[in-house]
Image (tube, rainbow, N blue to C red; front, side, top):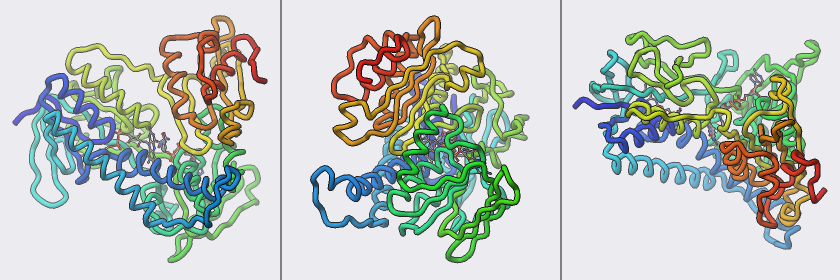
Length: 468
Ligand code: FAD
Ligand code: NAI
């Protein structure tokens, strides 16, 4: 059978693209090299990491906050195997969910590694067994990404690990050194710090989550230090030597080469970014070359150099985020069917699921300064909020950046309880190009965390927050 569209990769980009294609009446197939659907996000990314973040947060609450709330319990113990088992069940439920959606939408699923034979044909080779050829009018490449691990870090998957292995440790480690103070390092670092592991984070730059607003980095550093995590900024790891039961790591100060730090820890987690994954995809057979970062170049319609072959998600430029990949999946499906969709990349929010959570959308203050856009900042601390005091979630702040003359909201940055959910209001308002005054005049239920957003908007628009 020849398909209208075949999607290569079943992550959030690929499976969403396939569903939208099928909804639009296109005869659709999807190809996945692993025997389970859902890609990085569902199997070794967003979902399992959030499952462990939730479990470890419950443990941390029980050990550190219950007593103050007036709840007396015996000393809680971690059952790591059960924690991992529950995480696996969450993943399996989601796997089944994606398979169900494929059936419901009559999308044919081929398990095996797909490689281009020609512009209209791929060969799909399963792990064991004969390959089959799949013919298609159009293809959507959604092959995602893999962790970056320099050869010098001696990645052995036992003591030197990436996020994939860090999601499956079945005993609480005594100590862990994390290379990279980005999203993965801080989320997984939080999981283990809450369970009692001594965590060291070595970051090359002078702040953690360096692509987010610098106020967020500052606030989060304070909170995570409070959790016991230790940070070593402006250091470069020079040696990683795994042994049987531990790993030795050396880092050198970037300011004074004679100064080094040395650790012997249970695990070294490498979290310095991810690379687009196009291994053995046969791109050379159809004349597509990747750029200097390994990404597949695409035009404004997300079409590659070969007409009819599109690429989306982590394998192309832009933030490596599940919801960005999903938007692109819908965008390409609609483009193929003759519609004229649109994605506003500035309004794709970024979230870090630490506690407190961090969320941002639009421009950071650094970007506004760099671009010379005149702005007025308005800030409101969570500790001034009744709701935050009731729950004892006092860390963090909301920052609204509005245009100095027009008052249009240009950026919103939040560190605090439920920031991940609160950012949706900012995205909606910015999508409709609201002013800070619009946000400040909207009624926000009391007591809620969202009142901090209203107050920060008041501070930005008229320098008159009510509660500070
Ligand atoms: P992927 O999800 O990587 O899927 C690509 C799929 O293609 C894979 O299943 C792969 O096996 C398959 N494939 C590759 N090559 C072939 C081939 N030749 N033939 C057949 N199949 C192939 N993002 C968020 O937005 N929120 C989060 O909370 C979040 N948490 C994360 C936590 C961790 C630990 C990690 C590692 C990532 C996290 N991300 C998160 C990032 C998110 O997982 C990715 O941005 C997202 O999965 C990208 O989707 P994708 O569809 O482009 O690719
Ligand atoms: P990242 O790009 O977020 O962070 C990497 C960090 O490592 C940066 O701070 C960087 O300065 C630092 N670094 C780079 N090389 C280094 C070196 N040699 N030594 C020390 N530090 C070094 O990458 P990360 O954390 O690996 O995550 C990969 C991707 O996965 C991210 O781009 C993110 O988009 C996605 N992700 C998203 C999540 C979310 O949305 N909540 C959660 C986890 C991952």
